[in-house]
Image 1 (cartoon, rainbow, N blue to C red):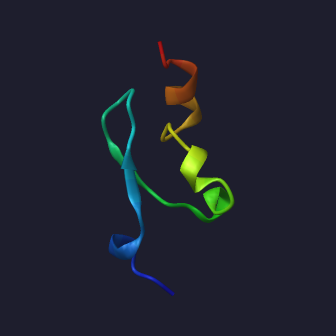
Image 2 (image 1 turned 180 degrees about the vertical axis):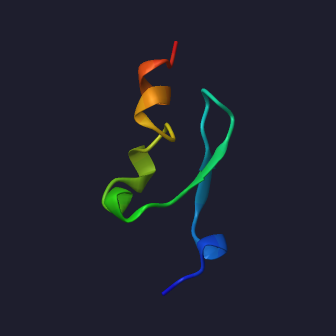
Length: 44
């Protein structure tokens, strides 16, 4: 098991907050852009 600090991170372009890798994003981590559904909906 890895520590949370060792997981890859990205910055959300909407809210500017960093978010870390999640297991449900394992297959498509390269295409994940937003940290949450709320940010994805308010992307404009």
